[in-house]
Length: 388
Image (cartoon, rainbow, N blue to C red; front, top):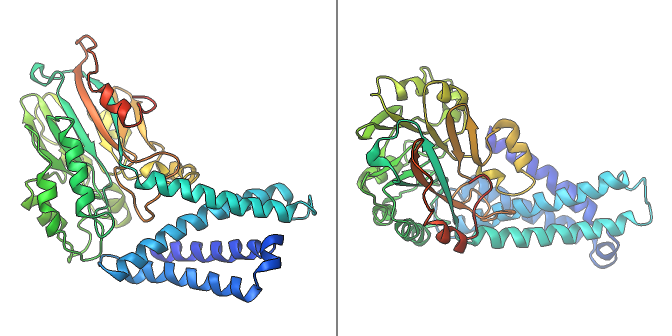
């Protein structure tokens, strides 16, 4: 259903963008209408073939998929710029003389925004520091560092070398605990065995833990779970583990998939049931049921999934479904942090902000503030995020 709706939307955007482009004086005077129509059909076909046949494979098909998804982003940004002009000019009924030229500027704006987004999407993710105070945090956990990555979407693009670079980036933070917040792999029935060495590059004294996302383990041919197991990454699906006396780490299955497929049971209740007293950190790929989590006594909830909208202004639509879009939120006594994604989905593009890795220092409520010695690392990689 999602794929069908996406193809329909992209088709409508194609018709709209090429229709409006044909009315721009510079284009109209220099490019025959049939060339515009044929170009639009070819680009639509590239997107369609990449979306339907290019997923989860390598080689030329994967390249077509990458080009098609990047084109989708270019189309979205261009359509947004054109629609803004059409709204202001009443689709040419107002400002009749200047409206066609303004559409030309909109085409240029779409191209410029696309170039910026491509550069941002290809940049390494920034490290963003947070200091979180937790009531009842064991004394032994004071000052421990948790590093979280979300939405890697590793497959043909990006691949092994990109993941190896992220593992090196994490090791440089000297974490005590590493968590992966879902959507780790991309590809329909693809093998991820070659990623095992790169995943093994992630290590921490308190272990490396993961929860599945809506792109993980969804088809019988996918080997994501086996890949994580081979790499020594422990998966939490509707269960908890006491990683240190007085500190519980719990994880749930993807709540979006659970809701869409009408699965029975209550993942959050199962994940927290029977836990021992102490501080609780909850891993949930999708930032849903956060109010329930706070009521159940969770101290820190970590999520991803939203990508922070990934390409502005798409985030405004994403926020309608996921009010916790990105960054830090206070929900009662619980702190919730939503990672805007370490990687990208679909287009290798981001506007306006790059991907991120979360570096969280755990503090007890009673402890005095300590110098954030990791802040200099964050500053080198782009500065502190809002609310950190």
